[in-house]
Length: 190
Image (cartoon, rainbow, N blue to C red; front, side, top):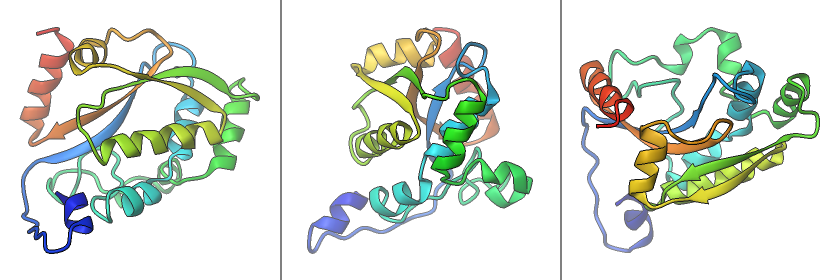
C-alpha cells in the first residue's frame, strides 16, 4: 500500500499503530564455514546500507533494529540500547567489511548462494536485489537462488538449506510467546 500511495495520485492511506512488526532477516548457519567466523557475519552486516533501503525502497518507513522493532514492541531493544562497539556493526561500512573478510581468511571475498522467494512482492524483492548488490560490493558473491514458496519453507524455516548458504526472509513478531511458538513450528518441521 505504501508503494501505491506514493505513486498513484489520489490514493489515500492511513497509518495505524499495530502490535506486529515485520522484520526482514538474513539467515546464516553460524555453526559452519564461512559464517561460523563472527568477522564474516559482521562483514555481512556492515555491507548492508540500511539507510538506503529504508529511504529509497521502504519510502522512509521502519528503522534498523537489532531484533524486535521498538515502535511496536516496548520491550524490544533499540539500536541505542546496544554497546557503541556493537552499534558499529549495523553501520554501512564497505571498507571495514572487506577488511573483516580479509582477516577471516577471505582476502578475495567468498562465494555463496542466497536463497529467497518472491512470495512477499514489493518492496521486499527490490530490497533483496539491493542486498545482493551490496554484498557483492564487499566481495561476498551471493548467487541468487529464487525458489517457490513451499520449497522456501522447506529449505529455510525447516533449516534444510545446504551449509554455507544464506537465505533472506521475513519474520513476524507479535509477542515473545508468539515468536517462540513460530520458532518451534518452523524448526520442528510441522
